[in-house]
Length: 404
Figure (cartoon, rainbow, N blue to C red):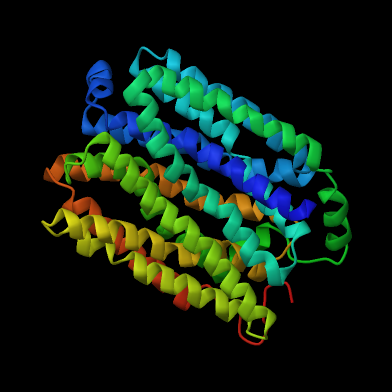
């Protein structure tokens, strides 16, 4: 019970992290906010990517900190500081101050994913890890699902400054159950397992599995971070929704993805417990997720708002088939002594996409005058992701896994 309570608490932690990432995206859809800071489309793309400059850069160092000091206190310190940075955004009066707060937010949020992945690796067994990953990663979808309508509501009623302050300080409540429940014994479990040996972190970069995993992760998250940073503006500017309706459709899109992520992780675990090969099972869930997600291009290129909204929800929900399974597959195929660093490397690829997607979207939109080119770019990356998991991310011939 304690283990699964902590899995849910880690999920809640990433919900808080993603609320603090999404709140700016909602502000960027506000005409008053754009006018106050005189924002162009390129400026909005720059603001959307600024968080990821520091976040992506620090993923491997953050994983190394988790490997060295365990998870309990690095996560507690990181959350306290990023909540403070989010709340401090309320005091910004200049464009560069917004940029600075997003960079600081990225510094302290960098520990959440590698830390949580390490905790799950040493506390949840293989045949239940898909569900644990699905629950944890669903937080990265429930965060925007809850954060978008909540931020829109607060912004509409109280203004953007109060919105940042309320959402930032509210996250600090998470620290109470975390410090009470987490025992901080993951270093003992890691030492026991690592005494059996395994490949070094550096040697993994000589394998196609590692590079396929990093490339596939980038492709998955290009779509995710477009949705996190530009989907609210797309709904308002291209589909002419009100701020309230935008919040609701953003909630349905991310909520569907989160729900499917949990169900897909559970389904893959169920198949594995009944004898299915873990690698084959999780790979095909991932490939199916990319293929369903690629239907977003159908909605993006239609003139029908109803069709567009339908495929916005279906494509993101479909990508949930991959969510928990692509993280769980990494821990199966890439075992080693530095699981925090491995998770950090994978999340670096994830968040390089976070830096590229909002900036490239803003550039393409400004260059072409529409959302069509940005949406076609998403489709291209999703198809590349299918290729990564078809041809690169699979066991080495006659060896099973790298660690065997």
